[in-house]
Image (cartoon, rainbow, N blue to C red; front, top):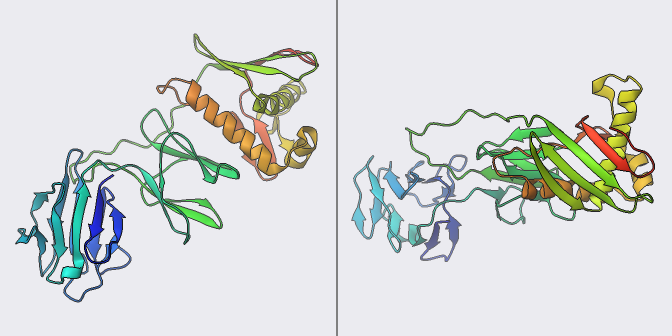
Length: 312
């Protein structure tokens, strides 16, 4: 992503798609502390192809020593020197002009910036409580115990002690047309388990419409198998759909001989495997749903072959 280097302080900043420079602390992406800086001094934006700078100040914005016309856009080039107002301590060197990337910037002090690629677990891979990944529509989704939501630029994500702000890499022009936020459901999906007699080996296949995807054998498939059986048992017993399949987390920990954090890691690995296996055009199913103290398997279209019992 495009990076600016302050010539005097050696400070580096990554440009956001809509990056505001000014004295106003609550609205500026980069705060200018000098007296001749305006509250909103200038804005650098990504238009989908180029980085542009717009001056909105009283004392001017300068590119390579030349003041640009107020309220007009000026295309930036690599190695341009930009300074805001007359104070040379606000001089910045444009190191590169690569497109922006969606990222997380820390709200909690001491946390790193995180460039979003693939699937991201927060606060870490070792303690995954929140999962972020992209939908086929190009929207970043946040999955947590509260469910799945579409992220908007500026949203805060993470846990109580580890919070980041989501910055989306989208063009930021007035003419930009935003897509309606929606999650398309994945229909006609079936989970097919093949289980060894001693239940040491659990193989899983997903059938979506007329396509079949082999997820092979993984340790986390046994977790899913236990939850799927509970869902099937409750369905056979005639429980209401809203109450089918819920398993107490403490009981599940005892059954698996794993603590809650390791169960979260297995859920994260399952989600990552489905995202990596299914085509990008398909929305990965939310296989596991959570509520206070309990989790359950979401889908009720299941076939289990082998193991201690067989059901479908």
